[in-house]
Each structure stands twice: as structure tokens, then as C-alpha cells.
Image (cartoon, rainbow, N blue to C red; front, side, top):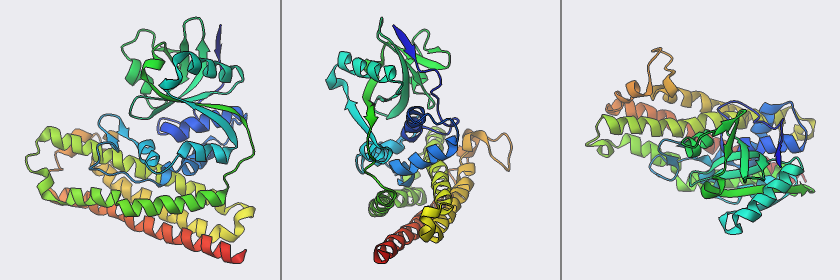
Length: 354
């Protein structure tokens, strides 16, 4: 028997990568929501905590070579972001890794698809999240939505890897890391105030670990680049690009999230704080765009049309060029501190009001 949930899809374009996008896709199908896609992905980027994390340019586990930034790895260091997200959405769920066995995992996926609920699944050590939307139990095949290119990455050498826009694989168990299966709807146990408090805790943790500061210090220390050749500078350009991509995309979504909340009547007492936080995160995005263009920005170099990352990498041997990028990234540190202070004041004022 073969079944595919026909109208399940990602809520946005190529930039909506990894867990928040996949969860938003599952949520929209379960809740039968077909509009307001941008705000759904924005909401769950913030709720999951991915939007608040920072990455360390010197940490190989944060920025995986060739696969881009690894935001879910960073938030996984903090807490159980899946449990928190499910608590906010009001879902019961099961989590299975390979220890459950292929038969049990496939049975859980089949049961979920039969109930018109897509399944979250991650593959490999790089936390490549996908959405499973179908199965064929005659040969143990799974069909999935793959916005981040994980299917192409893991199964590009397998004939017939894609069908009707979905990746198709019989090899999912060999490469899977985890399957997260929504089993039903429950009363949400995580509130917006919980989201704000967790955001404070994550930002405090990021400040203590100093991930972005490590990246700034790394770029400003000329000794780190002794003996670098063209290949190493091209690799550096890619790593800096990956770091900035997270800061640009995710911080822009936080800005949108708080802009939306500022318009809600239920949050009118917090609106002034929300608008301030939205402005600070919007500033982060704009400043990081400057540095992003300096390392190629996927070939879109505004002042020199057609300039690509390999061209920009040729400028990185200049200490002045590296310091300019570092100084732009430093803006993120300052603005995160302002956001943290704003959130603390908001929650303290709210507590005293009660």
C-alpha cells in the first residue's frame, strides 16, 4: 500500500531551513492552515529558540563545512528544543532513534501518515531535518519534503531519488538520526511568557559562552591566518558566510515576530518593549548584510555585480578587510545585550504589575 499526504508542503522558499521550517510544515498540515505561512515559520523559529542562538566561527561542530550553518546543533547544546516546541504547540509526540528498530519506526511513521500527520525526521550528524509525507509499505519506501537539500546530499547516487518533487528513499533507516512523530493534540503547557523567559536564558547563555565574541577575536587576530593559501581563505569565506546567514535570516524573523506581537491587543502592555526589540534585531540584520556581501553572499555582491565568493576570498588576506567584517559582527553582540536588558525589564515590570 502506498499513501502520500498530497498538500503538505514547506511554508516558504529555500531560506527556510532546518527544524523550524519542518515543524511549521507539520503544524500547518495538522492544523489545516494554508495561509499566513511567513508568520508560522517566524513564530516557530522564535519558539524553538533557534533564532536566539549564536555560532562560534572557531567551533567545527557549529559550522559544518559544505553544509552551511548548523543552528539546531547550537540550540541542542542548550536544552530540549523539541520538547519546548511541542509544549507550545500542544502536541503529544514520540521520538525514535535507530535503537527502536526499523520495523517499529516505520510502523510509527505509517500510523502517523494514515492519520494525515507528517513526520519530522533528521538525517546524519548534521541535523538535516526533513518532513516525511508518505510511505510505500510494500518495499519500506519513504517520501519526503526536503527544503535544505538533505535528500540530494544523502541519496544523490541512488536512482530515482526524487519523484513529483519529493525525495524517495529505501535507505532512510541507514542514515536517519531521529524520527519525531506527533501522536495527538493536548493542552499547550508552554506560554508566551515561557518563551520570553527562555529567550532571556538563551541570550544569557550566549553571552557567557561568547560564541560571537570568539568569532570577532578570531578574525582580528592576524596570527590565525599565517600560512593560509587561497584554498584556506575560500574556506574561511564560506564559514563566515554561514555564520552571517544565521544572524541575517533568523534575527530578521525575530524582528517580525515582535513586530506582530506589538500589534496584538492582548500584549498591549508589552508593545513598547516589543517594538524596541524588533528594531534592534532588524538593525542586526541590516549590519550583517554589509559583512555578508563582503564574503560573497552567494554571488550577490551589490557594488560589484557578478562577484562571487571565490573573488571575495581573495580580499580576506588583508587584515583591514577581516577587521571590517569583525567590527560589523560586533554590532550583534551589543544589540543582543540591549535586547536582553529590554526583556529583563519587561518581565520584571510584568511581574510587579501582577
